[in-house]
Image 1 (cartoon, rainbow, N blue to C red):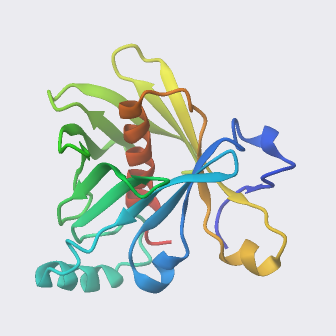
Image 2: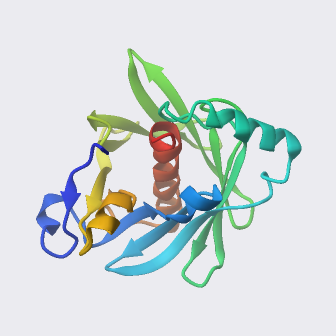
Length: 218
């Protein structure tokens, strides 16, 4: 059974800040097709998607790495193959691109639709505490993503000021059918929607990183 707190989307919004505003949820197609896809939902309306491209999957070496990763499927955060994902708006237009090289816990690099390098997301463990650092192209640490409790709640802090700019909470939505409650993926709720476009892209990328590093094997 998944370790998650059930959240009724319409009746229990008070349990998660802005729960009815902004979340990412991995689509069921991942279980059947093997490609990562996330829906981005704002106020009950899908406003975009994050979709894994086929660019990396056609590589023979990457296919072999993907097969290798199946042997580690019961371990958290194990995904050894290279990945490339597109962040799309509600009309399917490219907003940003997220790339990961092959390897355990490899960095994620984020690019705008004009191929501008926006950020690098680096996973590290300091004093047994996992941290994801969001680093600017100038190699300046901008944000740190910390685990707040039980791999369900995360805090994103500005590295320069120490101020929390957002939180991310992993929760389950409650649906009308038992089957959907059992099979539907958890959602990642982001409490900060008043963002400029570049910070928005970075937060979306952080959620993808959290899912890849912590949950992909679950």
